[in-house]
Image (cartoon, one colour):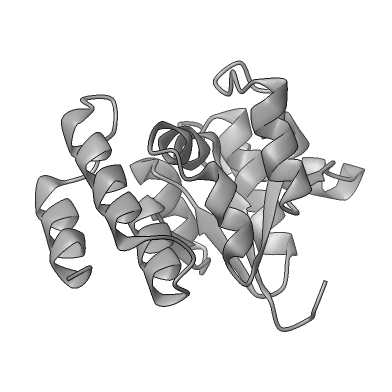
Length: 170
């Protein structure tokens, strides 16, 4: 991996939303290195098929098995912020341990804790912008993703932000 590439550490919520929007296969077209901590990959929240994981793996998604010191860091984070889930703490510890990292999350508590700790944090709308800027897929596919998210009550994106992103795609 090039030292200049941005490392994008994924939590479950963003991977789920990207799957819903049928964008998993285009992530590899971005000039970033995508990472999913092993506990997140094994989470029951991610009921991805073997084929979906193969698409991510073939696209360069790294499954990161946290070493003991990062598990310890995650446990320390969780003790300090008990409302975070264990998986949130694993994602945060992974992002904090990586140079040039971005934590990709849709979880507002995780976002707030990560930002308070100085981490760079983005959500799936950032991915839309990155895909658009990189011309990694057709604009119509990005608009369709926004429509899917807008119509899905389990995707927690403010309609105002979806509309702003839609306008920027013009």
